[in-house]
Length: 240
Image 1 (spheres, rainbow, N blue to C red):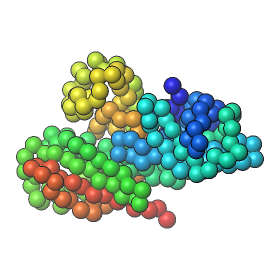
Image 2: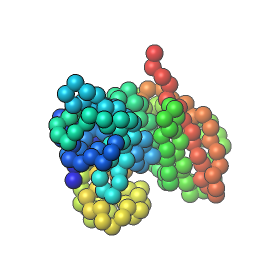
Image 3: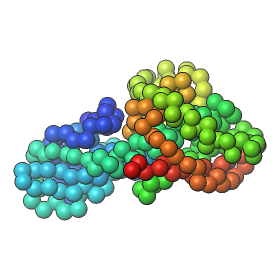
Image 4: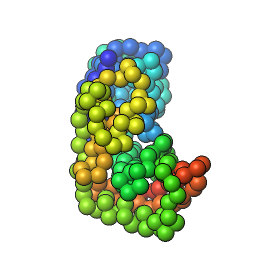
């Protein structure tokens, strides 16, 4: 199985690697910095370099347990050594959104025991998260929620990861257990992403090192999606 370097360091933008398999415009590498679509986070794009040639990576998916890199055009590419390089601006934007979604989920769990049921980061600089509350949420709270979450961001909480056996993770109290129960039994080692003093969740995505990197954000819309379920749509402000 290829080594997934993005799990070890979300800030690594390139690596020297080797093409193990090719099928038309689809490539499998022995190690990669490219994140495949998953967990509500879109895939990375970028390039593969071989000699004087560059090949655009336009899509990355996990298929039958392997990470497949789709190329715009694989003409003149051959099995062998290549340099893999991601589009950093795209990756970093998704990292900030992914961490922000964890901040929102962690804060609402701590305040109300609410659980995130799904989330999605879109390619056009926005995201959403669906939260299931145990009961009705006071309308006046929805007005101040954005301010509370922005305050948490500015407190500069550090983000860390660790990998533990499934059995050990299942004994951790809180919302983690609910999420773990949704994972296939075949997954026995679980990667946890923790935001200090706020949240820890099973997650295979990429994240920033501290919440302050997220910057300013806004809640654009809160929509009812069923009994006690709210869809929160958000946007991170572009830094000038």
